[in-house]
Image (cartoon, rainbow, N blue to C red; front, side, top):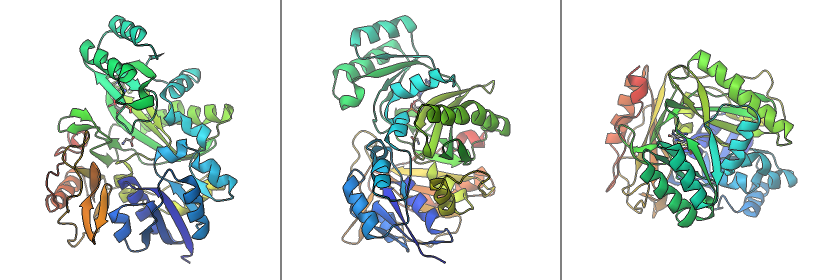
Length: 428
Ligand code: AMP
Ligand code: GLY
């Protein structure tokens, strides 16, 4: 019986994909997305509520007024602000980590110290607030080297400096400039790691967890992994670099000690735990970062492949009842191509009408919205990452062809995408 109402907090492609998959669960009648985007507004069975992700009182009032059975949090900002603590104090069921556990993402210095404390593999690092000391360290350590702003910077607080001049400029900018705001007043300087990146996410409750399929993101703006870092220009699942042996090593060396370490430190973790990994040629694994939420755009291809009841799983997690559970996945790979607005990531233009959205949709293809809005009934751009166009295929080549075929039918002035999403999977 479809009687349950779910609230998804967020406005991105990740939230559209989570809401879309939740709506397919046996018990779910309706999904409300706050604040949502044009895609979630137009989806049958979904509606938007105009409440900002940072308006915690407003979100609680919404969940109460709409008699929401389960709330799922998309982005990190409300988690770091304590939305889960506030919902639980109000007696509302919510899936996500509490404020203390969310520090694993909100503070890179906390995360790095945590990793070292628990012997979880990660790059060697130092923390600085003083520019001269930081400069002295990078000059002694040499390039390439990586500079990270401590706080939340929407995926844009990391500079991979290939030479000393770039490292020095990044330190100047973060510690003395104002481009990162207070997020940049403390920096982590860490060793550069070579290898291939992968994303590994689990649904966790304390020590128990259910693994999601592996995936891989494309963080640089331009083809061939060139250009500035972005929030992610495309993703696919599974990631061939995550073999069965690597997956087992990730669970033993990263996921389990992380959940155990958090529990031991009184920060029991309930929520999506995302490990950003670097995997070297010998199969060695290091943690690049933790997120306390699903990845965006990785969620979009993952939700295409998930062939199971997401509501039942997340509901079980909020009851502490994950033990013995697992998830079924479509064996076919899925690819998601981000279509971005001109100027992304620095200063995306917005307000452009999008054409080509209303063509007949194949079952294997889905366009998830991110930065879109409805203006007089028309879908217009309203952010940097505008859409994630996803497709399932018998193999990566077929999934990619289907996704790009759909991309080619959609346009607005200045739109662009990377043409090489899943290039690593296709070359293996
Ligand atoms: P993060 O937000 O920490 O995941 O960093 C963003 C991106 O910067 C990562 O996805 C990597 O591509 C790159 N990166 C971060 N740390 C390192 C590192 N230690 N070595 C090489 N690349 C890195
Ligand atoms: N796609 C990377 C992230 O969500 O942080």
